[in-house]
Length: 99
Image (cartoon, rainbow, N blue to C red; front, side, top):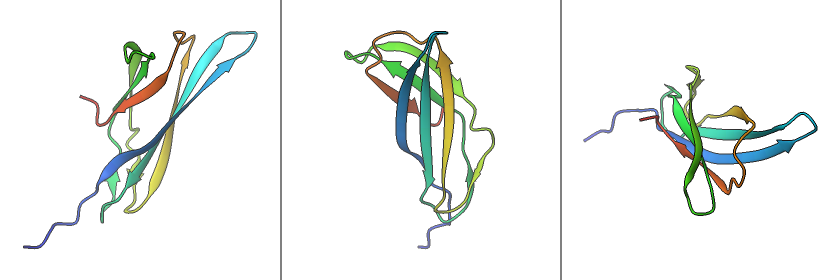
């Protein structure tokens, strides 16, 4: 049996940076997507979840994939910023695709 050529888009890396200045604070989340498939595909919407040290949800929001087309074997980064985020962020989780 032959396999059909498909896009296989997955989250490759998630990073977050806290930004604090005299005006306020923000958390900037960078999500890297990779397509290990043999066809191009579109990045779907996804959920960003901020978690504390006990893995309790502090905040979450949905981010549009913006219809970005990811080439076969391509990579792309989408960034999202939450202003005045909750304190005690231990890690960030990404649900892809959004449910």
